[in-house]
Amino acid sequence: MTEETPNQDWISQAEAARRKGVSRQAINKLVKAGRLKTLEIAGSVFVSSEQISQYTPAPKGRKKKNLI
Image (cartoon, rainbow, N blue to C red; front, side, top):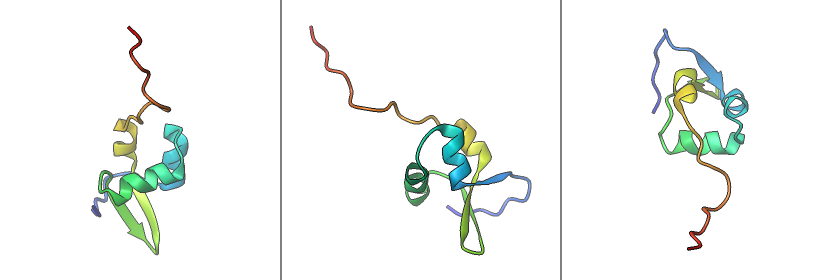
């Protein structure tokens, strides 16, 4: 989902990963799935900082079993 919007802030995928505490691969998966707006400049892919700030990563690990 590539969009060119001059009023938007764009950050690298590595910076997005640092801000959210996830791996670069996790951000790359979201980009490939089309869940994040991207901007490509000279082969580098940047993501919308606004969407990164709204993104909430899923909890780590397996879901706990209900032991009742």
